[in-house]
Image (tube, rainbow, N blue to C red; front, side, top):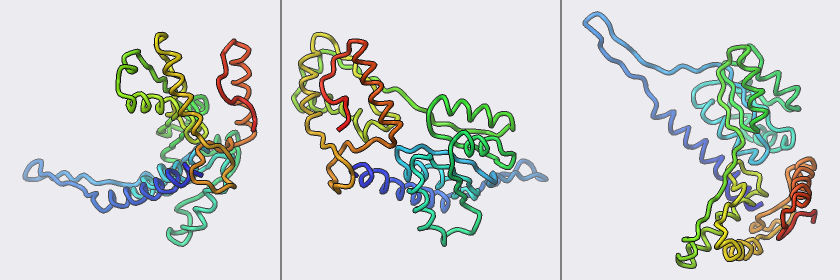
Amino acid sequence: MRETLAADLPLAVDHFRYFAGCVRAQEGTAAEIDEFTAAYHFHEPLGGVGQIIPWNFPLLMAAWKLAPALGAGNCVVLKPAEQTPLSITLLMELIKDLVPPGVINVVHGYGKEAGEALASHPGIAKMAFTGSTVTGGHILELAAKSLIPSTVELGGKSPNIFFEDIMQAEESFIEKAAEGVVLGFLNQGEVCTCPSRALVQESIFEQFMAAVMKRIQTIKRGSARYRDHDRRAGVAAAIRQNSLILGDCSAGGRAGVARRRGGENR
């Protein structure tokens, strides 16, 4: 609930407003080459743009791709993640009278079927994908066979490194450093730029981890049905994702990793 109201919804609105402003400011340029020749530079739409988005911020991810493509005059075929079809369906219901028929097209389905068909379709002039590295590589391969130019934003790893001199700083600085680690739980950890691991100098490990655990204990967990805007950690996006998380926790335990908090269904 917290990330939906603070990020997914307002930032999606901001992106549409931003690119609407870009359209108003965009113009071509003309230059005289010689007395017989003039050069005119202008922008043309590509045509049909294929877009595949992930499930972690279903509206914001759609806005990132829809707004610039529409602003440039393109038509769009958008495939949302199969885990989050309702957000896009509701958005289309809200804007269906604002654009001509056929300008925005939504294709629901699994990646193996709908995603592959979209990425390899000869009518697509540009492909844009956000998701995992493995799937992104597959999308690039499919698009390349039809010479479709593609842009992919793939999953990342974001290690945080902390040296012993941070413990010599003011308490507010240490708290901020600890908060950097805790950002790994933002949106249930379902953010590609979330901290994935912390590398802490051994001399300050226990002291720094105490600050981290203190910050973690303030996180409010629970389902969005409680309508508590301060809840920072809700349910996983899908049962499969929940199983992957628990599997990682179990694998860590078998490898001798000490669990300090959580790691089980609630």
